[in-house]
Amino acid sequence: MDLTATPQLIIITGKGGVGKTSVALALTKHLKENCRNVLYSSFDQLTNTNLCENLEIPFFEITPAESAQIYVGKKLGSKTIASWVMKTPFFKSLFNMIPGLGMVILMGHIIEKLEKDPTLTIILDSPSSGHALTMLESSHNFKEMFGSGLIVQDIERMHEFLYQKQLLKTYIVCLPTLMAANESLELRESFKLLEINRVELILNDLLHMAEEIKDKEEELPDFLKVKVNLEKEVEAEFINNFEHELPHLSVRNEIEMINKLKDLVGSLC
Image (cartoon, rainbow, N blue to C red):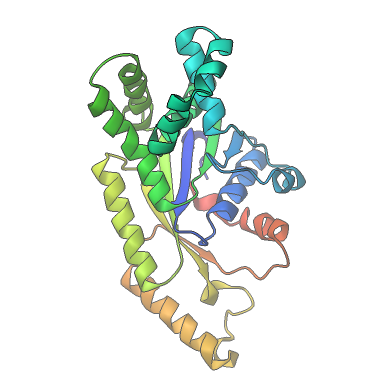
């Protein structure tokens, strides 16, 4: 990997259960071990801090509520008033009704952190593909809704970072099934409509690429032979669409998974 070309913000997304978190943590660990100033972020979900600490993975954690309070405090010039404002029924209802608002503020917080330290890279572990799309779509929606003002100025600064400076890269992780592959391609097209063009697809958990399977496919039980054949059909059909492939890893726990995976994600970025 050319570490000098690593973008500042890397979003790992995809459907639930496809291995996003493992890929995100493995990539963070890989970059750290290659002397990169890097942080893992689970965005608006709780971070598995024990796992990060056991793997010596540096992480950055802030909730949408905390991020919003910091943002309001800066605008009002008072942390105390911001704390009071955020506890009012109006603001609580506002964030419940418009979840995208909290995501936009949190994304702005992350980008501000990156702007302050150009050497920093943040690996953002997005909880789901729709979630990641909403996170990026919302900024456009709010810009159109408000038209002008301080919030729009902040959104324009965020867009400059994401689009003009090309400091964002997105990976869509996908399991090797026909439906999942098509959904991933549709998601990439949705990102392109938002002018998010640095998007690459990862076909994950390929059984026929596993070390213990190679050259032994004839010895597999019938149900695994069927799975391997289906994987190969998907791989062949979408050969020009997926930039990366990762093998199935037979491991005992998540720590072993990430330690093995970190040595395989060097082709990313």
